[in-house]
Structures are given as C-alpha cells and as structure tokens.
Picture 1: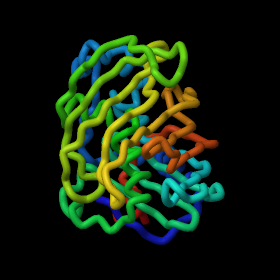
Picture 2: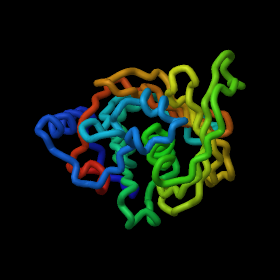
Picture 3: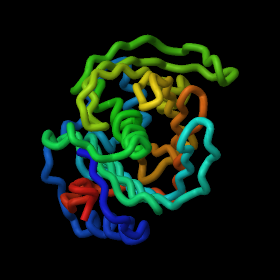
Picture 4: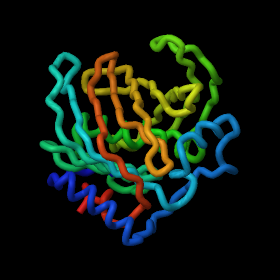
Amino acid sequence: MVRESKTLSNIAILFAAITAAALGQQPQAKTSFVTFSSVPSHLYQHWKAYGDRIAKPGAERIVASGTVIRRATPFAAASSPASVTVLIEYPGRARVDEAGKGSASFDVGLTTGNSSAQSTEDVGDMLELLVEDFSDGFFRIATAEGRQRWIGENFRSADVPGRLYDIAEVTFQSSVRGAVTTQVKTYFFDSKTKLLAKVAYRESKTRGLVAVESEFSDWVQVSGQAVPKTLVRREDGVEMLRVSLSQVAITAAASDGSFEGGGK
C-alpha cells in the first residue's frame, strides 16, 4: 500500500533501523523465503550470487542513504541531488524518505487500500524500482507470485560491447501503483557475475505508453550480501531517476511500522 507522510531525518531513520535490529526485534509478518529447494535450477547461480538475504531470516532488510536526481518530464532539466533514505525489506516492502518530498512506503502483503494510492507518478516510479524491478522483486515474483519464462544464457548485449546477458521474463499481477494490473517484465542478468543488470518493460503513464528500463550497477558486498549502489530508471531512453547510495547496512526484518502509513 502506497502512502506518504511528513519527512523524517535520514540519519534518524538509519540509526533507528540499525538499533532496532541490534535489540533483536524480529519480523512477525509471513515471509516466503527463496531456498535452494525452491529456486529453479537455471536461476541457482543468480540466486547464489545475490547472497542469502532472501533465503533465511536475519538479513531481510537493506538500510541505505544517499542522493536522488529526478527529471519531471523527458524534456525537463535534471534536478539537483536531494538526500534520500531507502529501506528495502524482503519480501515486497519498501520505504523512501526524500528531502522535499516526504515519505512513501509499500507493502505487497497489505491487501486493502492498494486501489486507492494517493502518490504521484514519480513516487510510484521510485517504489516500482525498489519493489518489483530490484532483485528481491524478481526472485519473489519468479518463484511464487508470477509466471516465469527462461529465455536463455549468454545473449550478446546490444548496448555494452562484450557484455553477455542471461535473460528471464516474468508475468505477474502488479499492485505497486494502486490498481492491480497485469505486467510483463524482462530481467537481464550479467552472464559473468550473475547479478541483475537491467529490467525492461512497457508501462502506461499520463503521457502515454513508455518503454521503461531500470538499471542496477556498482554492486558491492555488504555483510555477505550483494547490493547495487546505483539504481537508474529510464523512459524512452531518457534518464528520469537516479539513486546513488553512499551508506548501506544489512539488518534483520523488524516490526517497527516502517511500511505502515509512510512509517512512524
């Protein structure tokens, strides 16, 4: 469910999330982990490269801070960098606290209110990037919620010389923008590292149907987990959103209200 509320301090949110985990707060929501026995054989190397955040309790949450640059329309100038704090928690939960915009959160496990989302399109873009396009979203959807079609390995990249992709397509019911719609997305994994490189799909916006490409790069290891420090969303080839993460921590899930009503 997408909601917005008053902006909180990025530093306070980061500190509170890490402190809550240190005090041993445990998740109470049901979590469908992607384990060795549940991951398809053709995705095993990609699952293994990502780490065990989505395989067992104890590291479900990514807590990160950095900056975000936006473009209001494809023809507008890019904004100045604004500070942002991001929480991503498996499965299907995300929260964003952005300077000048306030807070927004989404929890795929909440079944009421999704059809009455009050967020603007740019907030929806951010949450879609974090909930569905992110690696968490792919494994959750591909193994439990959607229909997955394995296209194959080692496809030559058309945009990066020498790069090869492993490609999978998923069809699923998306609710990240409120109304439930059928969505088809194609996920491209780097054939060498097995980490997610980009996601491509088409989406209806107020200005019409657009070709979307979400890109994930600058992958680093944090507490044994792979995390991308640069996340980019392009529409019809124009960069509309860039998130650059400078500080990243991994914690256990916590029932701290972060994904309820924009957080508390």
